[in-house]
Length: 506
Ligand code: SF4
Ligand code: SF4
Image (cartoon, rainbow, N blue to C red; front, side, top):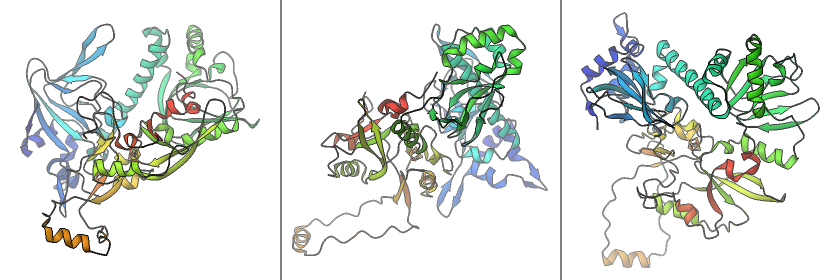
């Protein structure tokens, strides 16, 4: 366990050693330029009893001690090296755990878990030769730090570098391209991020780029009236490599998408590279745009446009099996002290083999999105992605501001009064007799007052409950376990809905 150095003076001294971050201490006419941000980050701020921050911790790790571990979900923190340096290890298939370099003072690491929502890609340790001092930064600090141009640029640069590296790592796996050819190709390519509804290319315009889609759903449509939806991993534009060619359809991004853009003009400068790219990418070319059966297209649109296809763990209810008994909500209430499961939500049809359709409800309960919107504005970092990949809320640090509930598009977060210590009940025989003889129903609980001490609650996949003790191998969910007809299931949408599972390429 690292030692936390709580001295604010030492934290400020550490901030001064990090380029970019030290801008927090810059002054204008005798005042700190980022005065409130600095206060929140280093000291924390009390807004009428609700504490926000501090977001910075100064930690000292023992020689050789791991700071983050490869494969862990660590979506709530990233780090700056204060001194002297840290060692980077990755697990290589043929060599096992291998030291691949060091990160020196003033540099950041671990930020991709927050920026891209991915598990840690390396193990980072204090050097064997001695202790290391590290600044740990909580997720909500990102919003404040992005106001500093140098930090913002460094974060964006890291994100783009990581995105490009991840695509090339994938290409190394699925093609026979040598490291030399990958380097040459990399010099002709750039990593791009586009927002929803961006038209990547239009029908009948010149094909002058090759695109490889890394994330995001895309829609193709043509003047001939054809339309389809595709997922990640397809290559577009190979036809234009050797001769000038026009796009045979229009391609629109259905959500924010990351992709690799390769300049055909640059590739054409080397005729051997043209041959190599043509040969290696042909297997991953997007299929021609052909008519798709209407039910299939409708179902694909429903799943992608509602975002259900992007769930990492989706609760579905087979409406042909559900007998409306409410056991699932009750089981949730019993497990957590309040129900997080509303039996209303998004209705869909699931296409089954043989052409029949199954009526499915995705209830308004957290689906642990790949890219969760609920996490974007939490001022305390109480909501985050935890060890098993589930999105959860730490009640201790939640101040009940409701930002996460507002951001979640699926109405999956509720605010409830924080449970106070129960008043001791008078359970004497007189009370029991009085209760028995009382003719009126139990009094209604008092209405929730917005000024009460609230806390946000949501489905956490029953993590940390008696259903999932620390050594359990298979996760269990109270709602699913207590459904008498087997109507409920927690699923991976790409496996459960065939019509979606088949849309990915690479
Ligand atoms: S709370 Fe809402 S936005 Fe957040 S992961 Fe769950 S479903 Fe997605
Ligand atoms: S209500 Fe949501 S956004 Fe606000 S502090 Fe709690 S978890 Fe964070």
